[in-house]
Image (cartoon, rainbow, N blue to C red; front, top):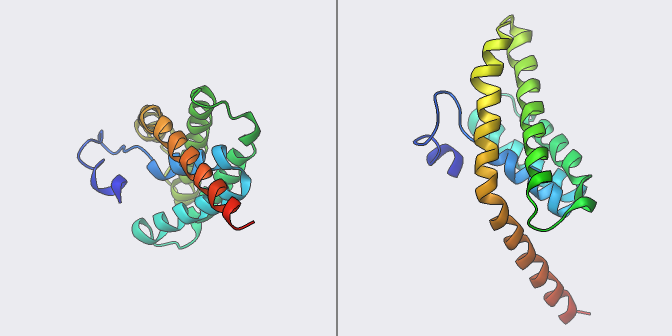
Length: 157
């Protein structure tokens, strides 16, 4: 909802930051493959329901992105943003390429250079800039949730 309401007003022509991708990447990176898959599927399903007519297409893409980023959970280093920044950029590039191939090339639109330089690369830049703002907040929120889970699990043991 934030992506569709707020970033419509602060977007470059045809480019908005991909907040659902950021949430998927960070949930997988911070919490592992299983949560990356679940959050990725949920984010993709939201994208499918509200933005497109093919149900399940983006859910599958985001699920795969969540799984791949969940494999990097063991390399989590607190507030060091370099790895999540790289993972987000690579995930956004992969996302853009899959969308380009499946939504444009298969329909006969072969303007790859235009799509790469006007959509994919600006979106990667914009998404990674937003990640720099969101990442510390998500790490702190994730730590608070883990602490709360540990306290509540200690009460029921």
